[in-house]
Length: 337
Image 1 (spheres, rainbow, N blue to C red):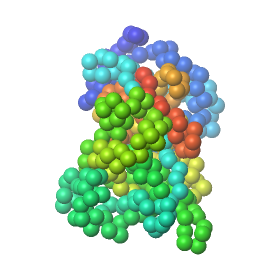
Image 2: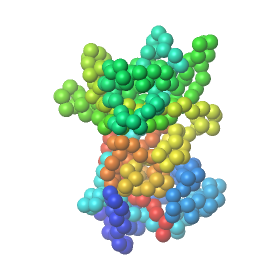
Image 3: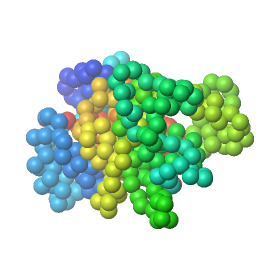
Image 4: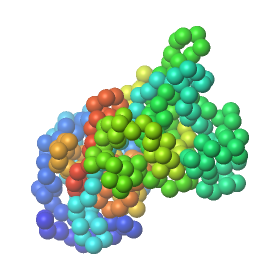
């Protein structure tokens, strides 16, 4: 492990240990131009003290890679992110934006509703569980008229809720279709339970990736409802337009800026603040990463010091990577000197 070059900084859930640039694996070999697009997005809502850098970040968007590299080394200090106990290795997983067909109204082949936020949710916390929403008349009455779209497959609906947003090709009554984005609007405040973990704990599967889960479901369709109800958390959505510019980026993350495929990560904000540039290193069966990313999102399962969810983008390749990505992680936060 590289020696510290100064005193560590303690956060609520992590410790930052200052190190030399030469200790960052792969530093200097990244295509910084790709990361700069994500950094420009973070500068739309920059936190202090990173806001002071944004004028220079914007100016350097037309700089050469060498100029960008030299500026970072002059203005930033790399800190190795560790747990409070000094462990520098954690876990990297992935997420993506599903692309799905849907209908505005319930129709043959499209019977699985996705809901906007119900009225009066604040009067009951936590709100009804997934099972209660499917079975209790009181819950169903509160959801009446709140369906924003209908999908064909309840497992796709669960995946969409776990990912937090999706690109939807919405069929209309005249036979046409248009693309929209369903973005995260809130939850029922129930705890998130992994259906993969539920299956593993019962000894039903050994591969808890989404391809593995779907393979088990194909063999056990009669247990689908039981599996879905194992996760009581439900996500509600809001509809957003998906114009040409919107379609070039992902949904907005917790920082409030649009995510960039391959360059945005979800983090625990108690370890790494939103908007921070991070040097991410992860080597495993799915991919080998040594690259600059921006901390722009979070998630209910993303907790701990050295923990990140890698935004893979959208489409089949992104779904495949995100569905299987689970490998060791190291991070260095790049903080103003």
